[in-house]
Image 1 (cartoon, chains in turn blue, orange):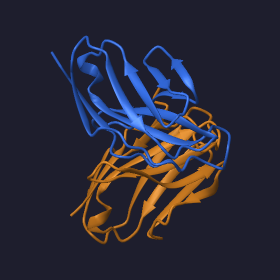
Image 2 (cartoon, chains in turn cyan, green):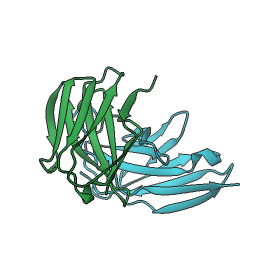
Image 3 (tube, each protein chain N blue to C red):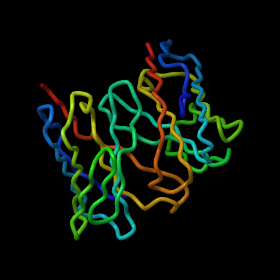
Image 4 (cartoon, rainbow over the protein chains, first blue to last red):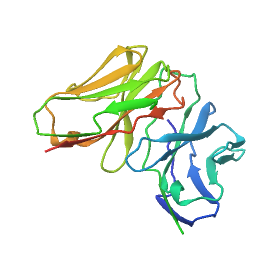
Length: 114
Length: 114
């Protein structure tokens, strides 16, 4: 599975847009990019998944350049409740293989303050 | 209704004891998982079951034995607990068995071995 690199931590003020970039230089042709969010004392929660270009949902946007060697999770107008750890994962797409074998790295710890 | 629920939330025990963690999902998913999150916050897959059948066993010591009585339940039994087993254990489920399927996590069981 493709190795990912993301910043260990980021700080933001409430109301700002936050962009977290993940590098995945050895991403394979059939790999998808998935982001999860984890609050303290909770399990990770799926945020968004994409293959190329841009994906947007009610929570975030995911920007993937043409070479797909990196991706950026964009959180619009963050609030204090967005303080969490954000994980970037890369692996073969849904409905391929037998089961998810994804290992979550240390993620990016986002701290939002007033 | 909690989608993926696991019990207990906290488990404190002595070395050498045997303990179990239970997990249930009401999402109708076919695949269930056990993940371990260590003190460095790496979240790594341990086991995966698809329709009660073991499909992933990630070099976990055989003191750990998962049991799936039906596809909605995946329990984890740990024999002869060791200090290094202290961690947070997360149960998860996904609709299918694809490598990058959307995972739904429980809130975790914090195991402390004294």
